[in-house]
Length: 316
Length: 269
Ligand SMILES: Nc1ncnc2c1ncn2[C@@H]1O[C@H](COP(=O)(O)OP(=O)(O)O)[C@@H](O)[C@H]1O
Ligand SMILES: [Mg+2]
Image 1 (tube, rainbow over the protein chains, first blue to last red):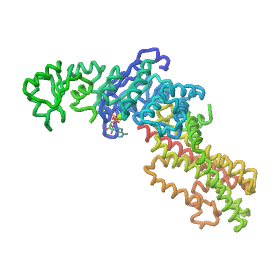
Image 2: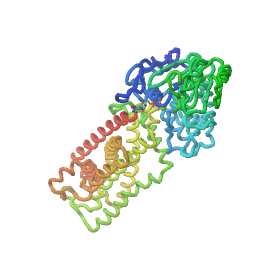
Image 3: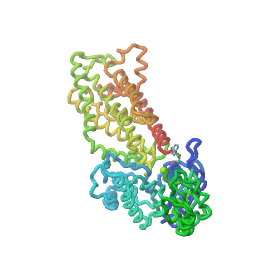
């Protein structure tokens, strides 16, 4: 099928069945199935080592799958890697900016790798530098830029070929909160303009903010799939009561409050009670004469979903 | 279709998009910011030419260039210096510079995320080494001609000959670099290049070596490079030229295909 014919269909942009990646005997991605549709913002949420980057590299056609089938834009990465890559934008986990070039040249040269004419890359570089709020640094070398600026430049660079599918591997890891918000704002704009986003993250707030739909990955496998809202509804309660006691080990307290909650998680420094009404449960705790150091009622998040599904926290 | 594209298509395996040219363009841009490193490469062979060829040559006098023909020592040694310069330039670019891009700058990680494939990387980097080497060789040849050590108009062909030497060494150097683990491993490159530079019938004729060693000398690639350029600059053109050309061409082709495959193995995991 030609790319144009493919565009007329509503077939998924990415379609994987039993997709597997092995490094020697080690299985990094263990037979995952997924479909990503046009216009979606799709996320992989999982801790370090879950296999997110390995999956992204296979989708980016820079890592051959060990097993299973993978179609990107209706094409086979093995046979048509170059054609697929010409339609993708890639933001790798580690910035791979060209430090021997200036900020502007990074975009110019990258555009030339896609076979774009010099006139076109000049024009797009100017637009993208505006988009990435880097116009005033255009002729600076890359090295002294802040982490957030480098990340924005990497994203700007990945857009030079006007990709229909943008792959972002941990776009905001290592950035301060302000820089993250600037980046999120840029990604929202892209999403509104119709670019399909596929991103990985181990921040549940990022997944909740950006993703229409996501899969939770752990140990190379997909353990759950849905919208952030669906996942929370399915795998957690409406509210969470967090109790912190003045002890080193919270496990003995579990039995004293277990009947108040649908489910309980014991973390090293606190108890998490999964309940429908957090305030009512907190009152019940007090009625039993228990005096926690701190009491917090909050809504369930994807972090709770992950904890429930895997018994571990996302960031250790 | 551009030349780079055509060359790229000719090579068997692995994948490329015929876009090596874009990588050459990238290198040209990078060197605009570091042009001093480019310029310094012009001087080394020229300094050798004057100190060894012209200076020492005055003490040595004429020597036998091979078939009983006596030439000035400077005319004997200049072609070897040109060949060695082509070798050194190509090896520098395809080892030190390439290792840096491969391991530290992670340049090819970003390049391979675009339509370019490993073959484009190999062809692009080798082409760039040739362009750079070609520039140095042109300047050297002009200086040699002005210094009066070029004996024949055949010397014009010494330019493509130098580019061929560059190709052979750049391709093999690139393949070797893909095996390097740290900067220490580059000692092996120096250990290969330096003896070759000194003992490939570069500074004294083949007949000066013991008979048993003559075979070893004749097996080295720089011997063929130096002999090829010497034949052209002295105007001793014959069938043996063809042997030199084929030797270097085969060496380059094997090196290039091997380098492209190794880059694929290393980066597309
Ligand atoms: N090139 C490789 N060789 C061997 N093991 C690898 C390689 N790349 C990744 N791995 C392993 O695969 C697992 C998944 O890694 P990765 O996909 O990077 O996870 P994530 O991006 O979710 O942190 C990790 O245990 C990692 O050590
Ligand atoms: Mg990762």
